[in-house]
Length: 316
Image (tube, rainbow, N blue to C red; front, side, top):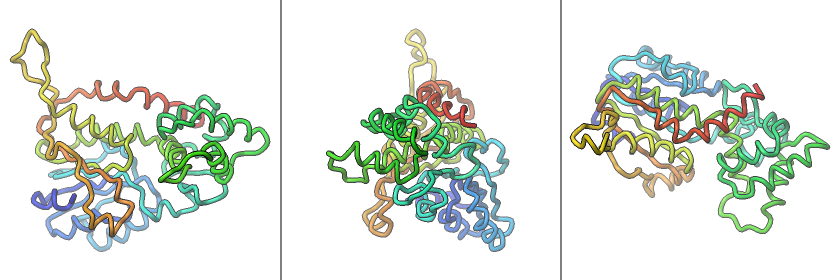
């Protein structure tokens, strides 16, 4: 679906903000007049990027950066900026990253360019701080119970991945789950460790700032929290709003996007069959129509989440 959206607009520069295994980049570079500037925080992406550079030469450029560093990317003739917020199978199965609850050993979850790990979070933050992370980033209703048990158990030994899974399973033993019981807690830790909320928020703002009028910002989300952020960003800044009831004719100066589709695009049955992990994906796309914007309202809307992320400052 994403390739279909951008294909009529081929011939230009595309920013692939989540290079990963290079899937989008490879497809885009099949058109000989295209250039891709790829970024990824994962150090493992550097090795693959060198192979792409050998093949595509000056049509490919790679930066080992985070979303929040997009403002340092300089490019001409940008047609679209793409964010695919999902994790690749290789990343999930990498036991050194420790993203999965299926692995034992020390907690990690660092994707790259991090200042602390999940081990630091679980073993150093207070039970109240852990409860906030689990509740707001994992949307887990048992956040308090689980954080309390963590604080009790770590008095004897540091909490490992296996220990954390055991605590979660014990506190959720009476529930029937369609997903693994540990999913939401592990999601919350991954979001917190990688500061995914602030990276997404400032990544979207930076994408707007470097994108020319007429270009597109495209985002694929995989869970409700990040989708809520993207939905608000596109919808709030694409609506006609009354600036003042006393001046009804005054145009909204903060309308900067045109939504290509008002509702998210979901993967087809065929894609889900080929790639089951795509089943929760939502694709949103907006066209930039104005250069002037004030995103204070956006930052205020998600201030609580940004403030929770700042708890991590004490671990740096």
